[in-house]
Amino acid sequence: MERGLKEKQIYGTYRRELMVAIAVYIVLLVGAIRLARPMDEGVLRTLALVSPMIGFGLMIRAIIRLVARIDEYQRMRMLETFSIAMAITGAVTFTYGFLETAGFPKISMFAVWMVMGVSWGVVGGVRRLLDR
Image (cartoon, rainbow, N blue to C red):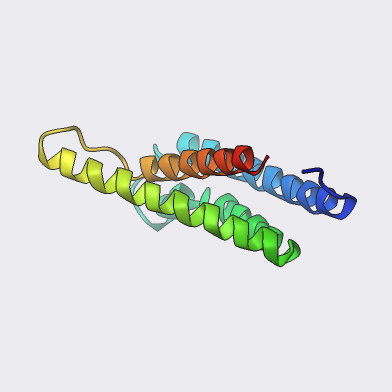
């Protein structure tokens, strides 16, 4: 299905906003790792270590703005894709929680974001293929 001009503009704007947010996240993450980790414990260190969440917040803002710009059908499809991906994420992380009680190594909560992102991408890709 070919995208119309308006849809291309919407997704172009989204990609730009998202890339800026990711760049902010990366800069703050590198800064937090290099500068905050060696700092003495305290409020300033804690604030520095969570500062990459500013970039993360900008990513959320970009997604919210995309959802506000797209039409109802696209919004419904995105919600369906996201819902399926979150169900998969829940199943994978819940299963691994049981595996941890069986002696598997504990995994950082950062892994949940990875599972969610991969699930969202795979579900979206499969749905696009099935729509052809």
